[in-house]
Amino acid sequence: MTGPTTRTAPADSTGTSAAPSILRQPRAVWAVAFACVIAFMGIGLVDPILKEIAAQLRATPSQVSLLFTSYMAVMGVSMLVTGVVSSRIGPKRTLLAGLALIIVSAALAGMSDSVGAVIGFRAGWGLGNALFVATALATIVSASAGSVGQAIILFEAALGLGIASGPLIGGVLGQVSWRGPFFGVSVLMTIALVATAFFLPSTPPTGRPTSLLDPFRALRHRALLLLALVAIFYNLGFFTLMAAGPFALPSYSIMGIGWTFFGWGLLLALTSVWLAPVLQRRFGTLPTLTAVLALFALDLAAMALGADHEPVVTAGIALAGAFLGVTNTLVTEAVMGAAPVERPVASAAYSFVRFTGGAVGPFVALKLAERVDLHAPFWFGAGAVAVGVAVVALGARTIAAALDRSPAPHGVTEAESELVGDLA
Image 1 (cartoon, rainbow, N blue to C red):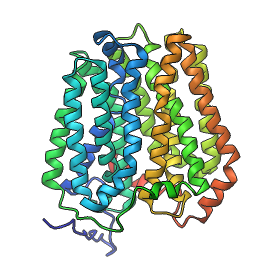
Image 2: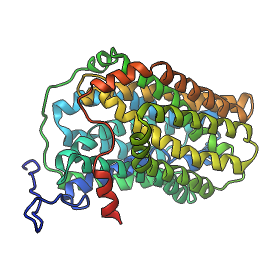
Image 3: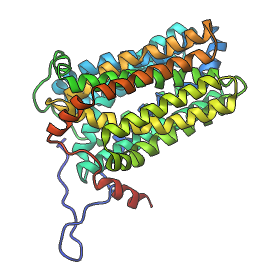
């Protein structure tokens, strides 16, 4: 099969080329975008069924928290090898390998009868997700019919839809059985694999083959290292919220927890695509990041104070989505310009530190819940995010200098307004 062809934009009545609609994409782009939605469902899919898994498999809260820890830790470590794999076998084969791993791991997790087995297969899911996610954006960009900005917005929209819908799908299928969400993902990913294999043209390896040492060399750049450390601390707060939130809502049904985290995911998706660029343009990257992280720390502190009151916890979870959406967008964009290395290498280095460091959060948080009380996990999360605020403040000059030297433009592209117009 041949690679994707370049499409010429149609001329408008004045004779100039009109940018194609962001929604007019080749089937290959939609196949990968659909797979992205399902892949990102995995982040919040298990939230509504955490309590049910604990009850059915006779597991403690800290044991079921390892569903997050194993997934994120393996995903983080795997980010070191995704570039090595993709640069040798090509993006399409890397995507298909990742999808196949997710299909098998999710199905086996659904068939398991012990919490240890579910944790193990969830780790395999993390490996598959790393292989898929690391190459999905580049594949969408290369196959897209429009601009790079449009392709990125399309990817972010798929990411947001997946994060938002994950808890809701988990709640709907979890009402039937705690195994339902795992089997559901396996079926949906099978559809995505077939569509990707059929519609996506072959993509041979391009560029320089990367090595396992490249991401570690990239961390020698202080700005990238500082941003990765910031990501560790806000991820400790993020995953604490994900793991401890359901246990702080004891009277909520599976669907009740699903709807709560759906609100969280919806705000995360909307703020990452629309609000973050507006705030960045108005106040700048680092001032906005510092303020939003401080607000997230205060949100977790409010949840710690009101952990005995379910309305407080519910509102805190939903509001946290807004803060996390802005933070994710600003930090990810800053990482791309923080070090004079290839973007895949910078991304691998950042993701490795971010996910492996933050993965301990759920286990520590729910251990604190078991040994202290339900207030303790949220205090832990608030303290961790506060440390992240301090790192941003202390490293602001270093990060700002690196961003000023970056040739890549920062801020919003015209793709944002194009997306709004196309969806209206």
